[in-house]
Image 1: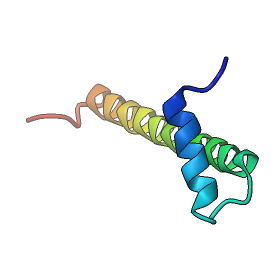
Image 2: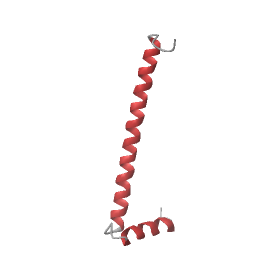
Image 3: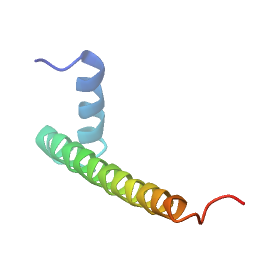
Image 4: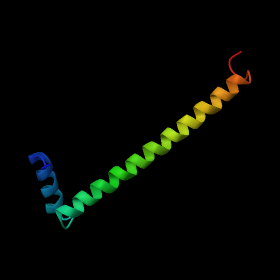
Length: 66
């Protein structure tokens, strides 16, 4: 699937800024950041599920609302 003109321009601008030497480096960094974001979201979801489970167990023991 080809890139949109907007994405091509963004990549071009990033390379021209001097921060990235090639378009491949821009894309590589973007993919690395997406992977990092996905891992963080997965970790947050896992933590939330654990907290929910703890809350359910507390309610089952009667340690909930008075």
